[in-house]
Image (cartoon, rainbow, N blue to C red; front, side):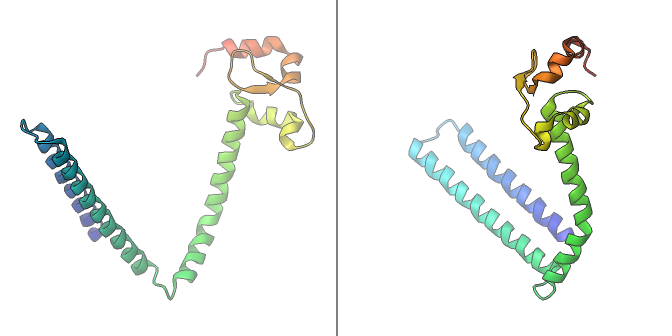
Length: 158
């Protein structure tokens, strides 16, 4: 990892040097023509692209070092097996978060989601824009207890 850190330090130093050089040119009183300045900027952009290309080649070399082509498939299958449970749990948590955010309530997201058949693909429910909020909600959930809805709307948000 030491060589990767050295490479990152080199990239940071080079980028900082280029930025300082450009700023120095801009601060000069006699900047010359706009065409000269554009040529200078284009030249610095070419240097940056060359540096990024070298960094990309360095990263690819490190990948080949860590995962040699002969054993790459075995190692990737192994790591996929190790990562799979965490990946599945992460996707499930993201879906849960998305469902709770979609219904717009605090803490009741799962309960509301279970009550509303359209979310499960069972049927169609009449929807309405929630008063005072920027989301859609089932009309029957609002009509069944509007006072509770407005009480929750005015409650202090934690």
